Length: 226
Image 1: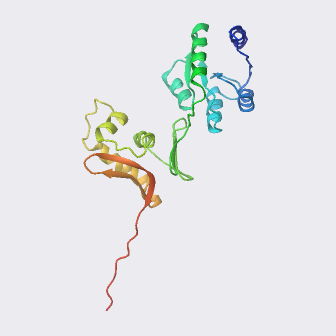
Image 2 (image 1 turned 60 degrees about the vertical axis):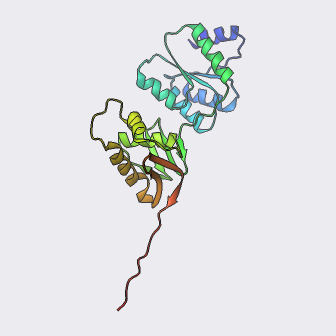
C-alpha cells in the first residue's frame, strides 16, 4: 500500500518519503520539514498513534492524517487525542485521500498541543492522566471529564447546565446537585492538597477555573493570655 500511495502521490506532483517502521517515521518527521504526514496506525516498532503523540510533544505541528483498518470509535478518538488532524479508515479511494491531503496542506501547520494546561495544572487526554505540577492526580472518570472541560475553557464561567451536558448528558435524571458534588470532589484533589484555590464558584452563574491559582490565606487567631 505504501508503494501504491507513493506512486499515486508522486503522479499528483508531491515529493514522497516512505518510512517502514514507527521509529523510522518519527526520525523522518523530526529531521525534515514536511507539508503533511500520512501515518498508518499499525506500524512495526511503534504505533502511528505513539509517533503522532511524540511529534506533538516535541511541538512538531505538521498536519497528520491517520490511516488505519480499524473503524472503532475508540481508535479514531485515540488518534485525534494524540494530535492527529484527520482520520481515514481503510479501504478508501485514492481520490478521497488526495482530497484530504490537499485540505491539510491548505490548512498548514496548526498548533495542536496534546496536553491541556492552565498554570501548573495539566491534563493529557490520550493517556487519561492529569497533574498539578509534578504530582499526578488520581481522578475518577467523571472528575477527569470535568477537569478536561474546565481546562478547555480557562477563565470562562461554566453554568451547571453546561457542565451537566458535557460530563453527563441531556437525559441525565439523577441527583439534581450532582455538579456541585463533583466540583467539591474535584477541589479536594486539585486545589486543597496544594493549598491553592483555582476552581472557584461564581455566585448565581456556575463555576470557573482561574487562569492563575490563588494561594489560600492562613489566618492566625489571637489567643487571650491569663
